[in-house]
Amino acid sequence: MEQPIDQPAASVPGTRRSPGIRLKLVGFLIPLIVLLVLAMAVAVVTVTNRSVRNDLIQRGVATSRIVALSARWSLVSDDNAAVYNLAVETCRSSPDIEYVAVIDTGGRILGHNDPRELGKRFIPSVRVVQLGGFVETQADDVRRNGKEMLEFSTAILHRGQRIGNVSVGFSKTTLIDAQRKVRRSIAAIALGVLALALLGSLALSSFITTPIKRLMAAIKVISTGRTFHRIPVGSSDEFGELLRSFNRMAETILSQQSALKGYADRLEQAYLGMVRVVAASIEARDPYTIGHSTRVAQMSCALGRKLGMGEEELGHLEKAALFHDVGKIGMPDEVLLKEERLSHGELDVMRRHPNEGAEILGMAPFLDRYVAIVAAHHEWYDGTGYPEGRKGAGIPVHSQMIALADAYDAMTTTRPYRQALTNTEAIESILEYRGTQFSPELTDAFVEMLRESPPLPDPDWKGMAL
Ligand SMILES: [Fe+2]
Image 1: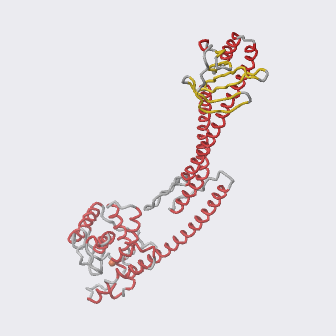
Image 2: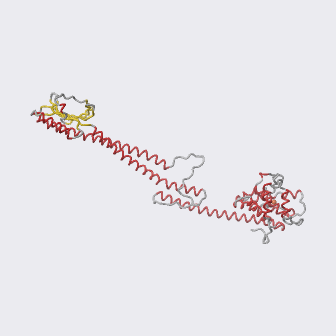
């Protein structure tokens, strides 16, 4: 099955997973970008606010000086109506001018945009901050009649003498509104820049981490022995070269793995063949037992299928059954072929064959799984078997299945000293040993299998396949 190369590697059980490179990159870039954007926004707002304020001051100074110049001749000629009109028109000229006052040297208001102020004494504003002097004009940040405003005062001079004073008040509302608009605009721009920076940092981290993730997934695929597919290479930069190199390395490793597996398979087959030769040669010494191992293997597998075993397990069971008597290779003919009852000494020799078979199979590491099965194929369910006297669940299930097939085949094979039993007679004999030599459950399944489909002699059988 094809494995997705982009699949993230699972964390190793028992270890705490640390943040990935992508998270670390984003975690580093985002705060950095936020700080930079905030610093730039603050700097731009400060500079812009100062610029807007300076513009207003310049306009206020100019307005105050123009009014002072215009009022000069009206004062000299005592034309109070002209002074009044000058104040009114100047105030109308701009919506952010709060008041315009022309005052004589005694502090009496000669001209004002509010006619009710005419003739009254001019009350100075409450100065909040002195903004500074601009030639003949003084600028202040003041509070007047409860309003915050910028106030500009210019002396009216005639032939070097001060003959009056002009005071112009500008509302700060316009200034504050302008500064608020600037702040909003800059905040919107900063948010846009932040969004772009976020997307950019995600794209950058993805660009960096994607090849690494592909490498990790590919290494996992190789390490678990699943089918490896080349990692797609989409760039010619250092990451692309890294992926290309990894593909070459993986192909070399897999090629070597395949060659090694081939050698191992051939070695295993050679050894299996050798053990089969040994098993067949044992049977060849006694013409009455030719084909015994093969029949035992066939019946064991039939029982395994009835019990629902999978094909892989059935394969192991078949080999274990084929090799179950391989330990008889060292048994002398006078014991192996003896037709009379064996003496105690001969019985001891006979009972060594399960362990000797286990030793032969134990010489090859890949046959390890059969060692315990072959060693226990003459153990009895009630613990009275040999060589160790194991009982019940202590005997491998495969050994117990082989024991049933072994006994049945021995009973249904003609020997020089007795005729073969029929299927029915053999079943009755096996049932006599249910719960003593054989497991009750396995006996029931085996007998049911024999009754459903009794094994038939194979007329084409010519000996054990090598
Ligand atoms: Fe045996």
